[in-house]
Length: 171
Image (cartoon, rainbow, N blue to C red; front, top):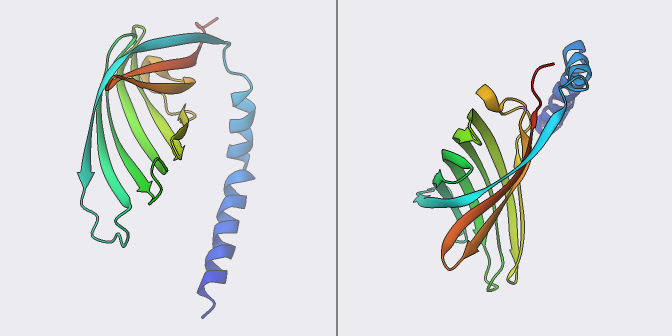
């Protein structure tokens, strides 16, 4: 009968444990000692394939789930795989989506991978898009990457602008 209260208390305890352990404290201290970051910009076209996934549990036809397959070209030569959740409305031009995708390849000659997190809405045709690199998701030569990506769609063609930073060379 009191299950929700137990879950809330347990969740609060886990959050407190993670935030206030010595490991979390040392992680915060270590993040302050990172190497100086070097700012960069990357641009290029990309191809995208969205594949709808059957969602038996969905009660609303306005909700959808899709897989993402991308091929980036230009300064970012990479592939990505991801998942998207989207919601449409009865109002023309209003919708929203969230997505996570892992990008693997080379970025200006540096090899590795990183994860992008998308959050976007369309308010009666007015877009709002936020795509960021998930902190500490970089691997290989892209370890420590941070950044923000923008997607441009013109004439049915997709391209990206990616402003990012990478730690500088070891000193």
